[in-house]
Image (cartoon, rainbow, N blue to C red):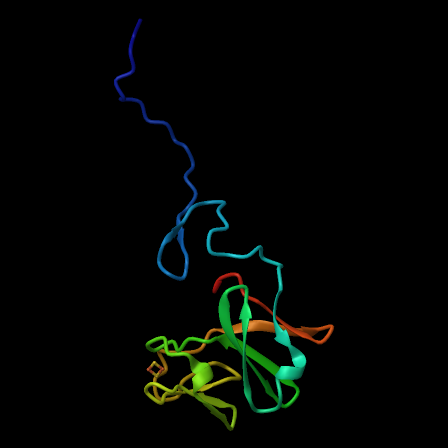
Length: 141
Ligand code: FES
């Protein structure tokens, strides 16, 4: 009987590894750190989101800020992309949210920071259904 000495190579397709937002490897087929793609999460009741004021809620356990600017809703994580300060503690004026820690301003319509273009808010898909604000973004959560 002949024994295998490991000299054979077998071409087995290996799916590419992906990383989650924390840089950890996400196993193929795993939903670790993600929601199912089409699952909307309730954040807070629409009555709490008044014109030109930030409202903080939670999508699951993740803090989210919701803003109503004109007829538009905007939602983003309650975490500054610079150093992680909670943006809900900052100010909102002229469609810009000002971070309480270092004072950078982010446009809530596009998420951009004019002074630091490498940093921007990650805007979440948001909708209002049956009076509730819901968000969807499987890549962030
Ligand atoms: S933590 Fe927000 S600007 Fe630095």
